[in-house]
Amino acid sequence: MTGDEQPTGPALRRILDRVGGPQLLDLLAEDLSGADLTTLMLEVYRRRADRLGPAEVMRRYRTDRFVAPAPTVFARLRQAEDVLLAALPGAFEMVTPAPLLPLAAHSAVATVDPRKVVATVRGSEVAADPTNALALEAARRRSAALAADHRCAEPVRLAANQRVVRAQHFAAPGQHAHFQLFALVTAGRDTGGGSFERRHLVDHLWFAARATAGAGLSGTEIRLTCLDASAAGLLTHAREALSAAPGVAVVDDPDRTTGRGYYTGLCYKVHTTVDGRPVELADGGFVDWTRRLTGNRKERLLIGGFGVDRLAALLPPPG
Image (cartoon, rainbow, N blue to C red; front, top):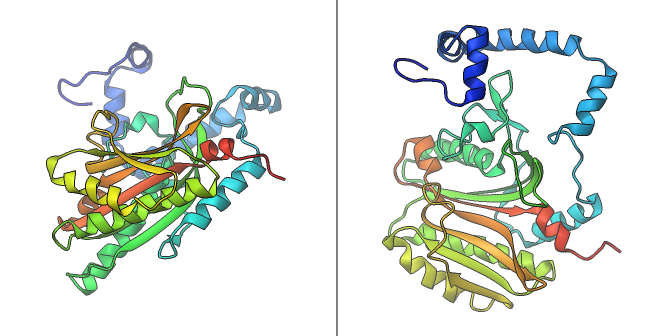
């Protein structure tokens, strides 16, 4: 916070007035090195931990939304995982991301407010979406491939099943501070004519169609939103490519408002119908993350994520 920048929010202003003013933020955020800030914060939390006893730990466990166990029955989560794994194309490699990512992994290339992510005192942040970790790994692999052959077009296909944490408060029922996401990404090179987009979008959408069919769900809608005119042909291509998918309708969703500024070109949502009401299961689309991470404007990335807890809630009880 330098120059004319002022602290925002009454709570932050109140705290800064108590501990020395806005200059403290400048010191902590800009003047201290990362290592020095970590050393300072580790000592702060060591002192705080030394003051806490078992009763206070138990109180926090009862009341802190971040540490409560998942409400979803484990057997149903396991069922949902099996359904998604069975639907995943063989070309995808399952990886196990770390529970932590470098600081700003969710905000430097994606439009995610850092306040929605749980940061750590060691200059990292807790995973909030596995697609961010997969994008970093895909960019690393693509960079290595491009270093060996600057025209390498071999795609990198990765998937992961990860429990993640979001810091924002969710008011809707059934939404929690931590939940499980099954994510997949495809990274590669633009080979011209939109061939990357057509081929890999269909792969991702067929995965969604197989997953909902494997879960015994009917009335599945894949809703596509074109974010610019150049992507209009993708909608027609996807509808034709999935015409043989039983119980799946590919529809245009031009009125979608979420994801604009996050996705590029085209994005999608997957809904199913339960007792006459739509339930959102998955979300995905094209992003520019690997283009920015590799510094190569020809790089392309398609991401997608399935809500495992939501899918588990729709499955019949395990036998």
